[in-house]
Length: 241
Image (cartoon, rainbow, N blue to C red; front, side, top):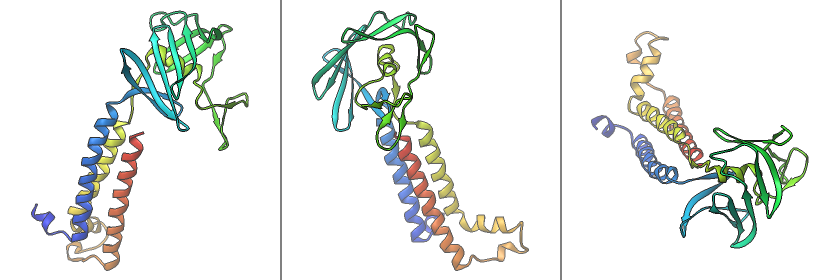
């Protein structure tokens, strides 16, 4: 505490802002990590329980989209509370993922094996891998065959993730840890700035303990402290997803 009181006002402000930032993001990460759901592209569909049914809700291009699991074999697809079809599967793929048939409004859109691991992989009845890849041209997204994709229309892989209950928690706790580490390094650098300055000079000059930092060195320190604080902020934000 004594060392903190002896710091310059600028350095005190940087430390206080850093600690407030960690506190705020600690709360935000707790709230974010508590959200369970499934990603559809870059959009996170939050898992909710509505009237006893599992529902995944999200927003794509200002459209409220929801997928309602009516039972283990049926999913209702809604856009702005308007019915946009029903997906059905002939078996519980969590129990038996082989030779499954997925239909949209009665029409078969996939037949084959569902490989359930860290993610969902599909192999059709001909033994070919069904890819879940898109190309973003900046003017919309396209599949590997060059067809433009409507971002509000779910892929086969996404529907299979819903049936397989392949949920995850939003946010990346590792990014929070990295952000905290950056903050700690920054605060240590501020609290012991003169000691660290002279310690590194010990390897380069004699009588390093007698050396005083120049005005340029002091300005450079202030810039570095702000850069590290901004870097921590960026890492925290990225980790929230």
